Image (cartoon, rainbow, N blue to C red; front, side):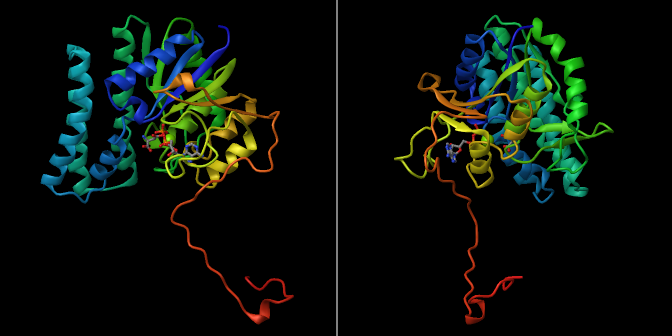
Length: 328
Ligand code: ADP
Ligand code: ASP
Ligand code: MG
């Protein structure tokens, strides 16, 4: 096995069949891309969170189920509804409905994570089928066999050593023969219960798997913008992509609100010094941002991040002048 590249695709990148085909092209254009990590299709996790809440009445459950089925079935339809995968997706949708009904009676955090995990299970099943239908050898892999976490449902912490050992044993041997397609965001605790790493956690999963796979040369985060920008391009049209940025700058941006990367993504990359690439799955030709230990350029400031829903409290009192410890 030469160098391995891990490629993660976010929700909008796997929102529909056409978007999945763009991802397939990116994966197969680089023979080193052997491990693919996916989010749920756009909108799916939000619907699952509502279904798991235990607060919906029957009509509202059915309405959410219809929306969910529409997203999954649109991809299935464009795939030509192959029998085996169609049956699998239908079975998963039934299971979600049953669990959502169960959540009304008995709601708990473990059940929520179980329900929410179905988004990534379905997107990876469908994407594996997309790759296979295009003639590539792809294998679906249940990341819960490897992504061991603690039991803090909704925001589980990965257990790095176990993930490293399991990935070496169970994923690495497959990479010689297959493009392995697996789930971001989800994991499992020591007794096999499904956990999740927190919203937006698929970036973190990709970085953890990159760290765990021997010889990982790059972690690619493919999203809906061609790189990390000087600030959120949705809010500021004048923002522009940054060609390169250091690990610590990217970590700081993520921590202070730049949604493009989950805040924990950089830590595994730093531990193994693996460069992280951020680019657009729709417009890969536009290039993107490389996040590395060191960069050649050293501007006065690199970017501006926005953290939403913050409260700024300004206190003023003559007692503060020349005093320390006032806020305490
Ligand atoms: P994905 O579903 O692929 O994980 P996200 O929606 O989580 O994508 O992250 C991509 C979004 O992050 C962009 O659409 C953009 O609005 C937002 N964003 C916030 N700050 C930045 C930034 N500095 N550079 C690029 N994108 C940013
Ligand atoms: N699907 C999950 C979410 O919407 C994880 C992710 O997209 O990274 O939060
Ligand atoms: Mg994200």
